[in-house]
Length: 197
Length: 197
DNA sequence: CCGTTCATGTAATCTGTTACATGATTTA
DNA sequence: TAAATCATGTAACAGATTACATGAACGG
Image (tube, rainbow over all chains, first blue to last red; front, side):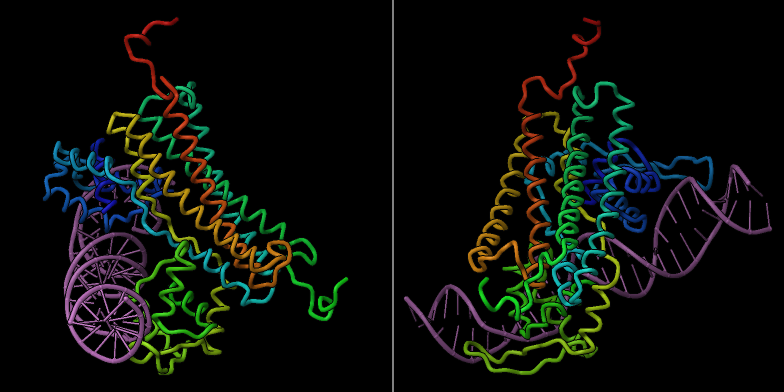
């Protein structure tokens, strides 16, 4: 289960369930999402397995926190996962299924609008990643040329997001162009196509 | 639920659960996967809702088949889904999480090997899509310049796969290059970096 | 007769989401 | 004093996978 290993990786820096949720939302949401209602029981399971250890700590606001950190056993499990095969779960893209069946609407203008909305979505996610990149560049003058191992791996992960989203935007642009060209992508009507020119 | 709508879209051409499973495995697996144990109950649900209608039919091998087709009500539901917003579920990429935490191994050679294995994976999926494209081009001499509405939408969906996988391969190549360059991507050791040049 | 393909399903389990429940503390 | 944030959890449901169960017909 990937969530377990992701929590393990994150808990190399100690933190509470609540802290971890913020990390998902603010930093790694573009490749993994998790809800508190899933995080808390998973932390419990990992602690019973001795992969992490939790200790109660006070908090300024609200009631007490429970702060977890990875154990040596947990670190071994994490490394095993990292040394293993890359895990490719099968991907599910509803928006692509929608495109696949959209001939049903029989209206290329609707398809074009659909691609326009998708373009907006991907472009804004791309902008968000580019903003993160800018932030990193500002914080580290050597970025991205000289990086320590940790920054290097974060950089490689970020590059996937950038290249992937650029490809998505390019896909939408290509499709929109094709769907906007008059008479393009449409088979000529039968009464005009029947004879050779 | 997307699976329901995908089955609806596929059942514009009548078919059995068994037939549909083949379509998932052979044609649309690159954007949606489904097991028989999920398909059969879903077909039952759709039939009770009158979105599809099933009739028993004989089969050569084995016992009888149950062949389903979309109803006018089902077609309305399908169109509603297609006219709605593009559906972006949050994506989960375990392999990317692995990269993100791989600094833990403290060995860039292992990271490089990991990217090598990923490259192989993405490249072979890309080759499979390119083969599909070739097949289409062979079957239709006008491909991809002049296409009817159905072929056009299938083409647009295929383009997503091609662009996306090309980006993935490019990502791996870029990373491998970076990880192979001697002393590159590695911060100089502290005892050498402490003083200015 | 044995393995493969055709064909349909159920049961148990896993992973993840939504909704609910509780309560302290700070800020407007 | 009301809303926001901090903080932890449970319960119910939804979606998907794996394992199990059954059986006919065909090819070698």
